[in-house]
Image 1 (cartoon, rainbow, N blue to C red):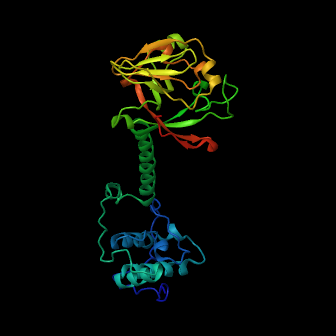
Image 2: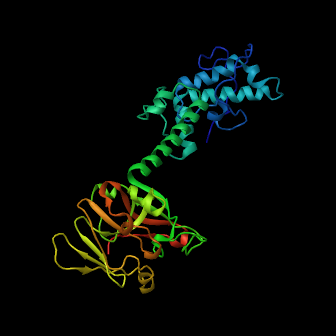
Image 3: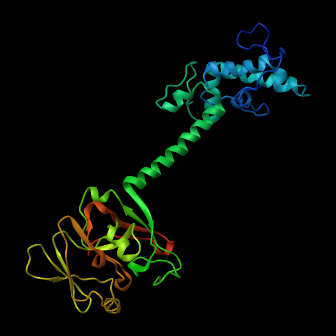
Length: 333
């Protein structure tokens, strides 16, 4: 139980409690905002729970030097002066302060009462320890917000990056929003591409990849920039589309063809695009062959050629919007 307020004002000769009743000309307001009506001595003096003995004495001396500035001609002035004096006596006595902290928290005090400042490894705290409390709070918030922004930018630059699906080239695997041509959903899917993944492993056949298009894409498709397609052909392979829309792969220096399974395609979607039937494409070393799942509405490597390894941004690993479409993309066949 706190013994705040149990003692009367100190005598003028008390070296620990300079009188708070001496008047002086007002000066600029003190940096902290005390709460004299509070029952907490820390709030009465306007100091933090980890304030040093110097901080406590400085806070008290603000009242001692300029009582008119803080209290004016308030009818309760004497009572408030008494509360200020009592708060100072409690907090300036290490034993009483420790007892108060234990009673307040229900455990051993987390604060040192030997009159020395806490040691901290936080460089911001060390740089701002002598600044007024409002400034320290503002700087702390600014550092937190700036740090959060830098973390987000770093994640986007090196770890993962979000993308919105703008067209129907990957329907029905990835939706775009109606009324776009061929779009099947009310909202476009929003996905995360793992930028860092390709730093540790090569992409696999069947991965859905975000990449930067070659210059020929803008020329032949009317737009370029960043596309998302499915990786079908690996470096050195030969890709063929037969007369029923099935995709066949022949390995480097291979003689046999292997038809790849594409469970995401229906028979109707295979037959919807006959423009590339019976065509064959060679994939150079270091390049990748990309196709859209919606073959009839996809302008892809069949039109503008393979994509260099350096142009790959990363595999799509997660759909995070809309809520009903949240899903993980494991990649590969």
